[in-house]
Length: 159
Image (cartoon, rainbow, N blue to C red; front, side, top):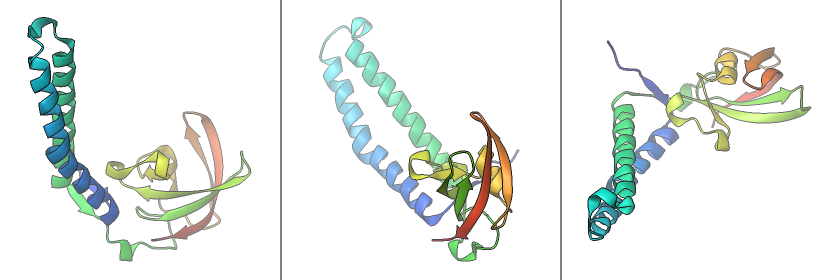
């Protein structure tokens, strides 16, 4: 069985590498220190600080393993080859939202770098998957968890 490939832009790759470096160098030391301090409180069987620090360590190591796996399986997107004729991963797409009578701009990215706070949506999300291959002036309806949404593509660009 082959590993899932994570489509990623140069910016997304840089952010993942920076997060991994931070987690391995800074965060690991912080958690190790918390465990050391909590051990000093005595009986580990009733030591909530120790349990909490060990849980944090497990979460941290899980996140490190997740990032390392993604980095082993990335497929870098050449941002110079991103078309402005059709929507693809790496496209910056401006949509007209009929329901709210406003324009919204999204960057279509691979699942490894999706971030709704930065309007970066995954090509695997309901809106993202519907956008792939569409052109300017195309209208479409997406079934989202919040109901059906109707959009029109106003503009397609790249960084």
